[in-house]
Length: 400
Image (cartoon, rainbow, N blue to C red; front, side, top):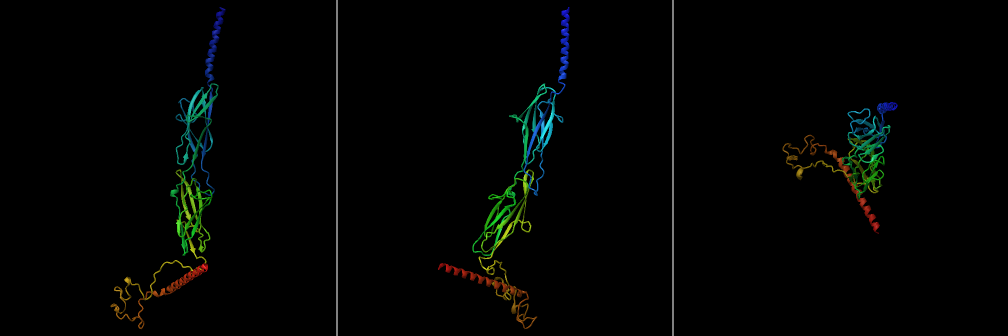
């Protein structure tokens, strides 16, 4: 009997212990097994800020969007999850924490992390997709394994984005020509040099430049261009154009300074250039005009033959007659005694006794002009003859 009582007590104790274990098991897992927080690192690179005083481009969008998506619908998710997906944003260069994600049971949980920002011109996005495996143990410990695009394991969840507007198109840049004009009659065509100089040596320049300077040469009267270039950053850029005084004998140089102002702005991910060219009087121009006066190699200025346009002159008493007809014989404008509409016109009816002088047209006012032109032509011819004579004498002396 005693042995049976002992067995019964043993069984009863075992039953009570089993019941206690069954009751204590759910209580053991009632507390969270683990709380996991993920850290996402974002790096955003952009062009350097424009120099002080320059016009900056429109502010850049530095906020990027992401999603954490569970690979099983039953996986625990962070607070704020909607429709089974946790969406979040990161601004600039910062580290952002996701979570905590509360796991109440041990096990293996898989997720994917991806970038979802809508593409915009000029931006280069990191489109890496991370696969996450979170292993939770009954002890509450856990481990996180991240793989990049399903490949090698990664130590950190990192996204690198950048912005760089497309370079400006040099083909649409206005390239104002340099126009050289020489006044005078030089014995030979001189070579003139012009200089394009950047306000900052680091400014973009056309091909063939060195240290922010490019030169252009034009022989005699003519034109030329420095060339075009592309911009890679927004801002305001300045350049000057001048003529280099090389000291050619007998020339007065043009000292005009032209300024090029290029305002570069980012528009829809591409740099656009607005160019303004001004002269020394700060007036906008479309070409760079330089005028050099040739005064002669050592000759007095009054002996230089100027280039003047030919002005038709009407000599008093000798009207121009088409077809080379003699005065007084024009069938359309008869004059003299043969004019039937004015008989007796050989004598001035207004002032009898005076010889006929023709109509009062004011031609007498050109007589002083004729005298001046005659004197100028005579002086020019005399100077040229003297210059040629002096040249021949020098030639003879040199040949002796």
